[in-house]
Amino acid sequence: AEPDTPAGRTFAPPSARRLARELGVDVAAVDGSGPGGRVTEADVRAHAEGDAGAADAGGPDDGPEPRPAPTPTDTGSDGRKSAVSKRGADDGSADAPATPAGGPDPAGRETTLATPATRKAARDRDVDIDDVPTDQTRDGEAFVTAEAVNAYADALESPASTPEPEPVETGPGTEPAVTAGDASETSAPASGDETVPYRGVRRTIGKQMERSKFTAPHVTHHDTAEVDALVEAREELKPKAEAEGVKLTYMPFVMKAIVAGLKEYPYLNSELREDDEEIVLKSEYNLGIAVATDAGLMVPVVENVDEKGLFELADAVNDLASRARERKVKPAEMQGGTFSITNFGAIGGEYATPIINYPETAILGLGAIEERPVVRDHADVESEFLDDSDDSTVVPAPTLPLSLSIDHRVVDGAVAAEFANTVMEHLENPLLLLNE
Image 1: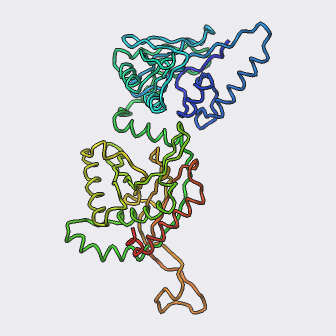
Image 2: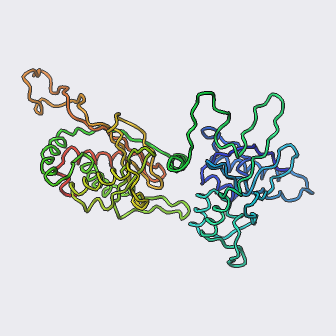
């Protein structure tokens, strides 16, 4: 008999869920070894190999192992379930599809033909593509389009198709299990606690962060640029910028330095397409600028940074950031990015571990530009208090801390360090930016 599956949510990245479907494994029955019990691809393979070994050890009369039923997807903030739900674990029966009240009937096919883009849409909408109804066929097999996936997901999200969570019996001395309809709450809020709805922009940001963190293996490289010349260059250009009605910050200089690095190390300006098994090196340099708003973090995109001057970039950044804070930025203006920047130094802080704006492969975090101790040669320091017996001394100088997070599947640590060196070289010698 199929092993009992735990009740409640199953935490697994899209890649692990896709592998489970390919191997015919019930992902809810897999013991996760990742953080918080998250199921990894290795866990799915180990589970599949264990099932195969158990089948080989069976008697000659053992029939083929039944294909496990599709597992329920993780619920959203409104307690939505997929068209498949768990039966009670006490009757020893296998999982079976259940039709939600008022919702569409799941197709429950064994196989389904679909393009990679359609399968991605199904994963994004948390539906099993084998359950999506369709009248189209290809080579005698059911064929599902992205439109059919979205229509099926929309029908599941309607209030009429949201079933009440089934109670799960627990034995004496055990904690009550969390059902799929419990969202993320395991207990009622204490007296005086405030509850805030987890939906809208905040939920969208959370889902994107979760997908990025548990899909792309993050590595963060830290370094510090000495930016005396950059501070002086900005001060010299500020009056001219103000005369043209532009507020000149350090961001345009950083953006130009990043473009110089991306041209030399194009893998940081790329996208990994797992379904197609290819890495796309982008020809455009569209930089997303993370903006903190009352609704959450938004990342409007400045397109074609390599084709814009410093003042034009400053004006574009100021405009997008202002409209993002006012919730007036358009969705299209937050798409198409190839690399992102987050300036946490504007609020306070030196270093961080930024989360990549997936499916991009890198993001650069900027600390605060402040005077910090640096070591300088005597020849570069004018002071009557220097000791001639030493060749160098420690002096205060403006520095810019950098935190570069990369997708280690695409970018190696050495390449990340070389990219950071190129960016720092252009920040420490602003005249080099004239070539960008």
